[in-house]
Length: 170
View 1 (cartoon, rainbow, N blue to C red):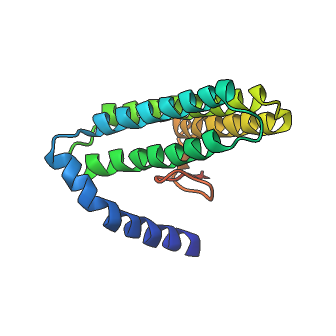
View 2: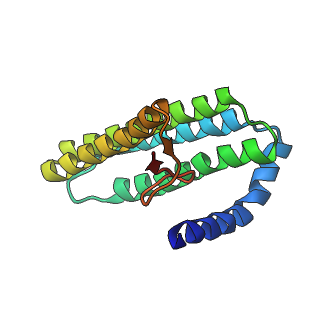
C-alpha cells in the first residue's frame, strides 16, 4: 500500500533528525518515563497558558493562542521521543507502554481543557463546541483501539494517527 510506504519513509526521515537528540537524552540519563512525564508537564503548561490567556487576554488577542500552539507542538515532540528513547536505549517494557499511553491521554485532556476554557471565556461558542468534538474524537480513537485489541482485532495504522498509528483488521 502506497500510504504505508510513504508513512514509513517519513517516519524514518524524522528518526534520522531526532535520533542524535534521543541518544543525548539516553546519555544524560533520561528514561522513557521521564520523557513522558516531561511531555505531560508541558501539556499542563499549555492548559495553564490558555487559562491565563482566557483570564487576562481579550477576545481577538491571539498572543496566548500563538504561544499555546507553539508549546503544543513542542510538547508533541516528547510524545515521539519517549518511544524512541525506549527503543534506542533498550528500555522497552509493558509498564512503560501503559504509562506512556495513559499519560498521553491525560496530556490530551489537559490540552483540550485549556483550549475549551479559553474559547468559552472569550465567547467563541461554536469553536469551543468543535474543540470539544475533537476531544471526543481523540478519546474515542484510543478507546476503539483498546477495545478492538481486547476482542482480538488488530489495530495498527490509519490516516489521522499518532506517530505509532492505528487501523483495524479482522
